[in-house]
Amino acid sequence: MKFVKNYRCTLCGREYSKNEKLYTCPECGEKGILDVEYDYDGLKNILSQSYFDNNRNYSMWRYKDIISVEDEYLDETLRVGWTPLYKSKSLADKIGLKELYIKDEGLNPTASLKDRASAVAVIKAKEEEKKTIACSSTGNAASSLAGNAARLGISTVIFVPERAPQGKLAQLLIYGAKVISVKGDYKETFELSKKAIDHWGWYNRNAAINPHLVEGKKTVAMEIAEQLRWHVPDWVVVSVGDGCTIGGVYKGFYDLFQIGLIERIPRILGVQAEGCCPFYTSYKENEPLRPAKENTIADSISVGVPRNPVKAMNAVSKSGGSWITISDTAILEAMKLLGSTEGIFGEPAGVAGLAGLIKALNENVISNDESVSIIVTGNGLKDVKNALAAVEAPIICNPDINQLKKYLSGLQ
Ligand SMILES: *Cc1c(COP(=O)(O)O)cnc(C)c1O
Ligand SMILES: [Zn+2]
Image (tube, rainbow, N blue to C red; front, side):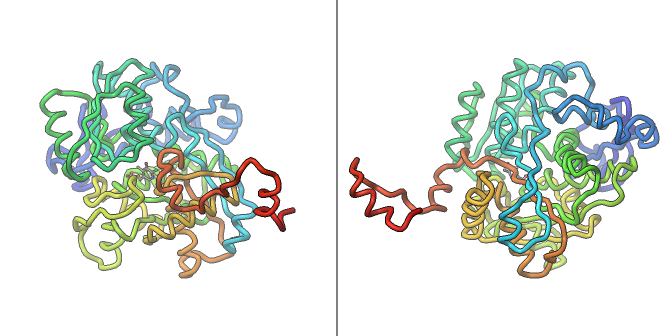
């Protein structure tokens, strides 16, 4: 917290002291999402390449000086972050791209990028001495919160829409959360959770509303930069639901740029599903954001009314990036392609970035000689039902070598 300067409203620009316990701007209400601002001059004095070369903390807390949390509980959390950034060999060739990197966020403790936000959420709850945290989520924010909270001995109340995939639901229940499965869509789920949080006074992990969570998510961008020795790629591609993740990606690069650790901010491509694309529609039609239907297999980005619109749209416009949509079919193809060429198994929203990259190459939004990092935001084991729809059935064979020889004739 030492280097936090103040909060600033993303809508009206008003500044608030870092000592105020605010979620949103009192003047603008719920839409006035706050941004955390840092003392970059102070940070420049301590954060250098050699500081990071000598930093042995291989988790997101290696960036603790530039996250809005106190140090006190950092050693107690699950180990989140410092996930691998793979340089692709065969996939890059296959899709005709010069340089491709794959950030595998499925390797976080509860198997999605959401752990970066949840780790911060549980620490903030500790700082405020809250015994219970609540959130509403399409799945991963919830299962991630439940796991990270369990580790610190904090109770969780989770609101999920009925359609949450089984793997995520199983995680929640195993981590001991009190789960409310709401008979409604994500929007209705969110509204109910908000009323309950107001009523019971729990700590609020609803991502957009809570400015600290984007500060956790931004560490994914910082890792990409550091893992590439501070030479950032031309593009970073990420799937978008509420808009907190893409907002965090931009913020991470923005911070590093302000400190002078990187020379530019990569262009950011925001990927949405065709069946649920409020940001894309607003961008294409140059119209304000309108509620969209929620109709895609990519449950984690099936968000008809995004809660973090300003940060998301800024991420694309300020980075000189773009928006793109992909079909559910393209998502399933990307899932199989990523698994079979690189050995990485992503959930539908996790591989949406790859599907978006392939389309962006076809449409010349990204050109073949550029360098790109995709972020695989969540692990495929969370949603096995959709994964099985992406592939062919296995060979069914009697325990008989002669029958097997027939099936496998021609195999080397
Ligand atoms: C939450 C999530 C996203 C999108 O993040 P937003 O902050 O909602 O835009 C993408 N992929 C996965 C796997 C997620 O869990
Ligand atoms: Zn405001």
